[in-house]
Length: 73
Image (cartoon, rainbow, N blue to C red; front, side, top):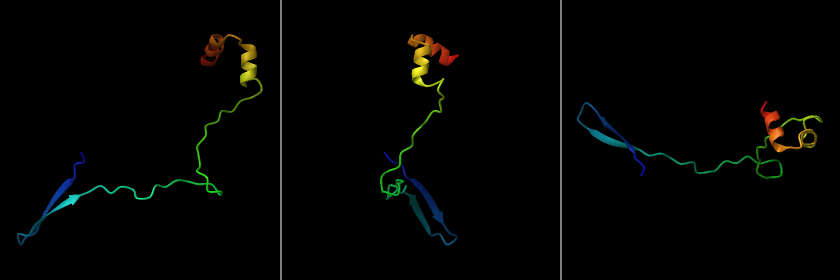
């Protein structure tokens, strides 16, 4: 249930009014697009070296538990 805020206004002549504040939704959904019109996505990347790539780490730590411990340390 949406609750609207009411404001009561009055002047010195005895006239009064109640104003109802209604939230206005966004009518147009804004999406960023690239030059070809495709939607833009955010991607997270991690920087790695030859010594820290997945194959090198799995070669150095064949047991997944040892690999996890060394990454945490």
